[in-house]
Length: 360
Image 1: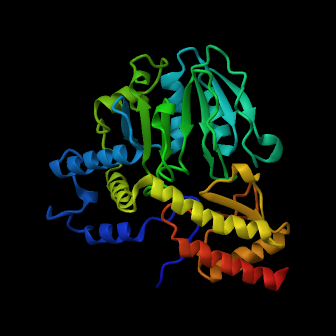
Image 2: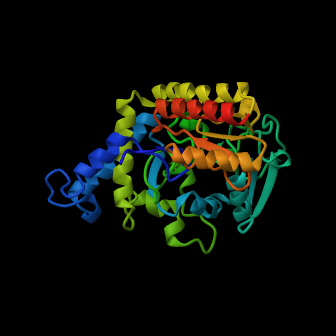
C-alpha cells in the first residue's frame, strides 16, 4: 500500500526517512540486541540518545546556556496547570486568548490565582490575532501567556506581544521548529511534539533557569515541579523514552535539511501555493485575516456544509487524509507541517482545482 498525504493536525505526518530508520532499528538498536522500546532509561545507550537529542535541539534553536530543556509527559494540556503552579508567585497572570487552547490554559490558571484576559479574538471566531502592542497588563502579573500558533483556527503571532517587562510564556505546539526563533524573548517556550516533531506523548519545555525554583504553589505535586525535572535531566521518572528517540531523529533530519531558516523558506513556499489558490478560487476561501495566517495550519471553507462534506469524502478517496476542519470552525483544514512534502500541497491544490471545476 502506498502512503497517503496526511494533513492531520496531530498526531501528524513525520519524515518518511525517520520512520524507515526507526523501522530498521526496531529490533536491534545499533548492536544493543534490543529495541529502544525495551531499553532501560538509565542505560548508557539511552543516556546517549537523550543527551544527543537535547544537544541537537539546542543547536537548532540556538538555546542559550541559561535555559533548561525538559522532556516531559502530559502533553501541552498538563502545562496549563504546571505553569501557574510554578510561576504564579503573586497569584496573578495575564492571558491573551486567541483560540481554544489559549482559552483552556486561561481557564486552568483560574484554579490557581487571578487569570486576567488582556486581549481576545473570540469576537470573530478567533480568525485574527489582536493588537498586542499596548495591553493593559497588571504591574504585579507573574507572566503573560500566549498560544503562538493556533492549530484549530490557523492564526499565528507574527509579532510577539509587548509584555511590558513581564515574562512571556508561549505554547508553540503547532509551530515548533518551523522557523528560527529568539529563545531569549521567552521565559518559557513549550509544546507537545505530536504536530511537528514526533509521536504523541512528549512535551518539550524550554525554560529560563531563574524561573526554576523551590518556591511553588502549596500542594504542587512533585511530578509537576520544574525543579525536580531540571535537577534530574528529565530522568526523575521513566521518561517517554521511545518518543524522545524519534524526536532526536527528527532533530537530525532538520539539521540535514539545513536547519530552521531552510525550513522556514520551505514552509513559506508550501503555504504560498495553498494560500494563493484560496485567494483566487471562486469556490474555496480561507477563514483567517491575511496578515495573521499560519504557515502550518490552513483552514478553508466553501460556504456550503454539504459541499464541504463532499469535498472531504472525495479528497479521502483520492489519497488526501484528515482534511475535515475542527468542529468549532467547520469546513476543511490542511495542516502542512515540516514533514509534509511540497508535492503533497501541489497535489492537493490540483485536486481542489478539479473539484472546483466540477462543483462551482
